[in-house]
Image 1: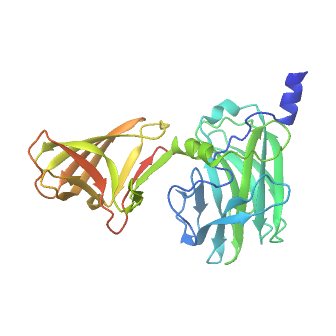
Image 2 (image 1 turned 120 degrees about the vertical axis):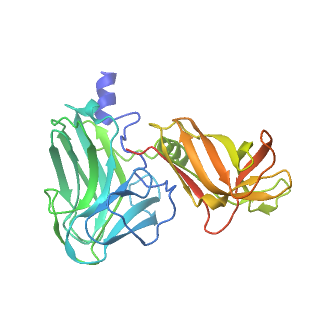
Amino acid sequence: TPQEQFNLIGAGRRNILINGDFQVSQRGDYTSASTMPNAYVLDRWLCDRNGTATVQHTSGHDIPGTPAICKAIKLVQTVTGNNYLGVRQKIENPTQYVGRTITYSAWVRSNTPNARIEWYTQGTTQTAIGPAHSGSGEWEYLSFTTTMTGNPSTNWYVDAFIDNGTYTNTTITAGEYIEVTMLQLELGKFATPFEHRSYGEELALCQRYFEVLEDLQSTDSNGAASTETLLGLGYVYTTTRVMGHITWKATKRVNPTCTVSPVTDIQCLSTAGAWISATGVDVRANKNSARFDITTGSAMQAAGQGCEVRFNSASPVGYIYIDAEL
């Protein structure tokens, strides 16, 4: 039947993973940054390690038979040890996949035969260990199919790791690495070609979990460059306190946690034409928007008057992280 054909070839939107080709990196550029254990780097992807390693966002990979020249993430061990090293994505609402046949595929490059793709569930634990890379240093396509039998009542981790094949440590020599791209997790018993989504689609999916507001160079209507980045409008609540409101680009998964750094990079415009730097910024956020409560270092105008709120383009460049990650 048409429905059977549709299911067989995996037509329609297939990839459960977000940012599987690592187009989006809202947290910054990674050339050779030290990794933190169990920390988000490229959007939706955690770097996890218990040794010492660096992370790189690499580009320009032209893999034959793939849909586009793509980007990848690469983790390199820097100190030899008995460790694990890799990237993982947590899947939202994993219980909906219990009893379903699932196929996981990825392009992997490594110089160790201990690099592999795998996944496991927390709660009623189930591990699914996929094939390992040959260690040739060339790109290889890996895939496997399994059925989720355990109930992932806590988390479902989908991984590409260097380990011993049972989710435990192995000896990783300094210089050994794992590099992955075009990771795809899909329902069904066949691995289909990677579903390449546009950057705009992928960014919108990522912003459900994480969004960044940052101090960026602007362009005036006459074409001139400006170092000012307007955040929005506020009003003076007291002479040293300003309230403002901002709406997120995408509705968040849950009420997010907001981090402002550094707070002194936020400024409010007084009626005297002076920009007054913040000494504190509190954020009350929900899934759609937030109120900013800004304490200023010196007196503003009288209460009740309006003002602009901006990043002041100081060094270091300021940012606001809006985090609703799993």
